[in-house]
Image 1 (cartoon, rainbow, N blue to C red):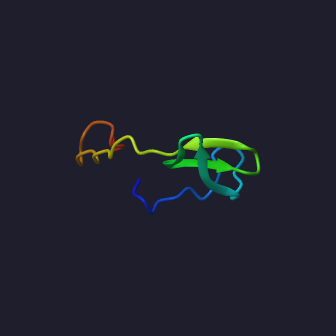
Image 2 (image 1 turned 60 degrees about the vertical axis):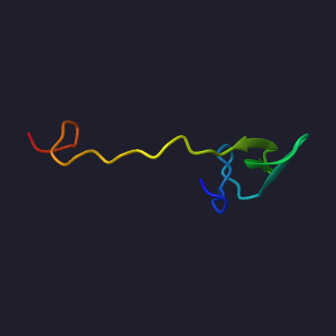
Length: 63
């Protein structure tokens, strides 16, 4: 995720009442708190996946 990407819904309750999380060390990029269900969570990207090649196994082709 880049600096502009923000979650739109809480992953736990689905509400939109999200705010940047302020922990003891201050605000950390990607940490959010839901003020509806009172949970804090972190959003981070692991890696970008490559698309499978056309015609490769598992592509859902015909038999």
